[in-house]
Image (tube, rainbow, N blue to C red):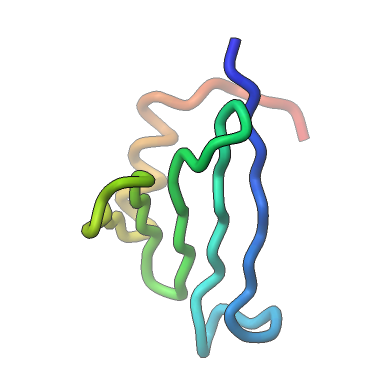
Length: 73
C-alpha cells in the first residue's frame, strides 16, 4: 500500500479570501500532485501536469455524496 504525505504550503496568512492554500501531496516520498484550495473552488494538479482539474465547491460536494465513504467525526 502506498504511503501518502501531505504538506501545507501557505501563500498568504491563513485566510483563503485573498490567496490560495496549497497542499503538496507525496506518495512513497515522491511528489504525487498539488491540491489548491481557494474561496470558490479546488484544483487538483498531478505532478507532471501544467494544467489542473478544477471543481466548484458544490461539484466537490456532489462527488463526496456519490463516491465518499461515511466517516465518524
